[in-house]
Length: 382
Image (cartoon, rainbow, N blue to C red; front, side):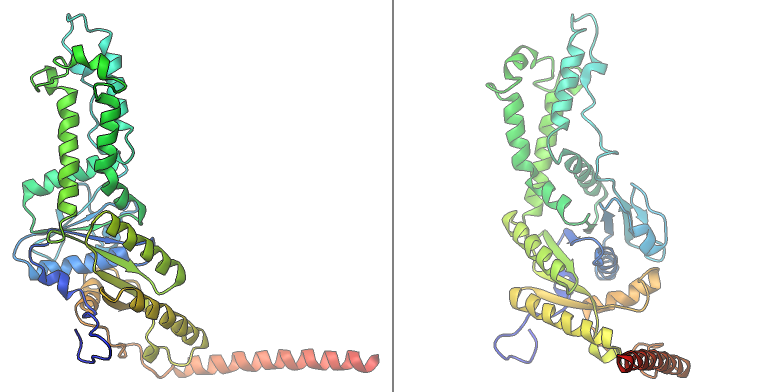
């Protein structure tokens, strides 16, 4: 907590708690589009790579793939080392399922001569069934990622998630999956009767041709459950919500926090990005008005989320792109931004700008005078 204990000590306004939690294995960074998730996840990964001995993997599941833009280096579906860091790797996964391994219908691997020529279609139908379970695409690609991650032994994985919805769909998956399987394959289910005689062929024991679709589906199910188990463990997984101090974002964040609680996913950090600090606004009326609006919403965040670490990061003059800027911005996550002047942000508006502003004012006043004179002349004629 901080030193000024008015009513209670607010939690430290940094992500230090995430860096210090050494067992953390999965860190999600999420929020709606355009609030700075990618910047936050890149900066957090940089900090983690400095804190941890082991390797850090940053994965983007956002189809827009902003990691390549942020680091200005091309990433793909395989972990690639980020230039300039010994132990930071990044990859961009297509979670829409275009790259997912489908349940390749075993019809291809069916031995002919079993009188099974007609079975191909039923089995393809079965794979289509499995593939039509909602959210299965995201799950398979996540499953693949988890398999890869387990083989490669990263000390921590940061997910730059797609704008809000997808991640949560994923976490509902185990329930959906079990229900669907039961519906399709249970003894009273849609295909249950037909499967009795086929079970051995489909590799009930996994010894059928091609290992069998059933064992594939079962593997898939176990994977989905393992994902869920790991993600619901607050020692292993946490979700960092990123937002901006505006109404819509506040509302979205509230929904996100509720959903996370419902799926039992730990979340105790909120990053409020694009904050204007009054010390840096000088004399712009527009910016002062924005500061007042932002302060109102920041106050609401602080009232709503007393038990969260609330981290405020500044709106800068330029985009945060390239390693140097990311490293610099990352400092705002581990120590509160003070709103001091930045270099090149001098309070003195340059003389040319002042002259320009005055000229604009003069032009406006001239126009106003002309209008008033016209009105006056019109009223006199009446």
